Length: 169
Image (tube, rainbow, N blue to C red; front, side, top):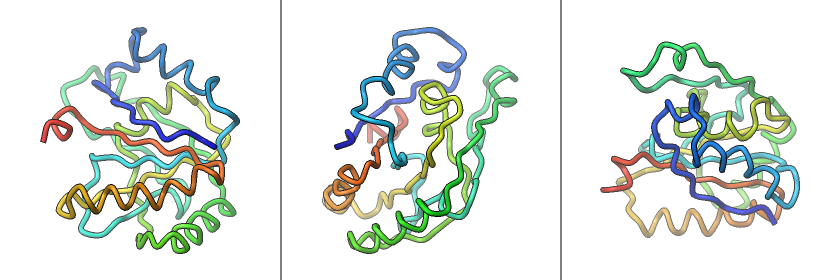
């Protein structure tokens, strides 16, 4: 069973530094029971009126959704792994789990790609990002987590990312 992890991404500039956080990110893949089939990231950086998922419609890219950092951060890219078969399977599996989600081509935000690029500079599996609907409240998100838990048995690693600002509220 793949683990569900909560990763705080820190400042985007963390990826330019060697520190305890980046060392942890680098070492984390070796601690997994096996190579993930896919990674599903739930990020508080993406709030939508209805749950949405990116990465299932092909490569969505990354967004540099921050400002005031060194120029080198804005030049970073991340080569995604596209897998139509896994995307089709994931959407079907989400329907089976009663997760009502719309597909979206939104680029992945820095809460997702900053730690994952350190963990897997060039992943050989797909990475998906799932939005939240913050107006639905804690009970709704708890229920979503309970439904998504089944994906762990299917080889999908689940991560939740949050920003400092959103985790205080």
